[in-house]
Amino acid sequence: MPQDNYFVIPFQPYPRLASSMKCINLIPFVAGAVSAAVVRECRPNPKGTAPEPSPNTLEGFKRYDYYRVLSEHHKTIPGYEAVMSSAECAIASPKYMMYVVLDKYDPKACADVCTSHSGCDACKATHTHHNIPNEPAHKLHPVNIYIQREPSVEPGISCPNPPAVAVTKCALYSEPVTKNDCINNGQEIGPLDSSDNPFKIIIRGSNGA
Image 1 (tube, rainbow, N blue to C red):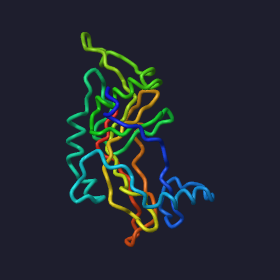
Image 2 (image 1 turned 90 degrees about the vertical axis):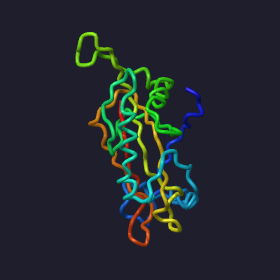
Image 3 (image 1 turned 120 degrees about the vertical axis):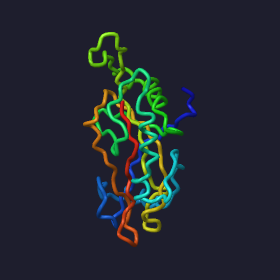
């Protein structure tokens, strides 16, 4: 697959600032972490790679039906078996390897990334669907594609609960995934705004295969 169809984003946990007490997975209070959070405050994040709702609000993202339509239209990959479709969660597994950002919602491209990545393709499994004679074998790709609501800038004291972007992500795993692994429902990050709301990361259109 052409490399310009996606780009790898190294894992960088969002900084949690002391003014927010409703965040999940708070980092330890150490000087280095606080300094890093201050430096990153309000810094622009990469642009979105998925259509944004109108209005582009938390509730707008939750209700945007296009995400459901998009994921259901692309819920199958020829030769592969879908394990979940149009979920509002992402796979959380100890077999997680990495994720890439896709330039559009394309499950085939996500599967191709897995195929080309050592360790992901090595653990694919094949089987005959429901043991039906003459039914073609299906592959279980350990991948999860979804659309995630993310902040357009790093939330900070000067920019709490900033405007959002929608990002298409493709996560890879070293073993096949199941719908029971879909337990990541997002999180709250950054300080509270004037209405006592943090920025909320949520997930839509999650397909796994």
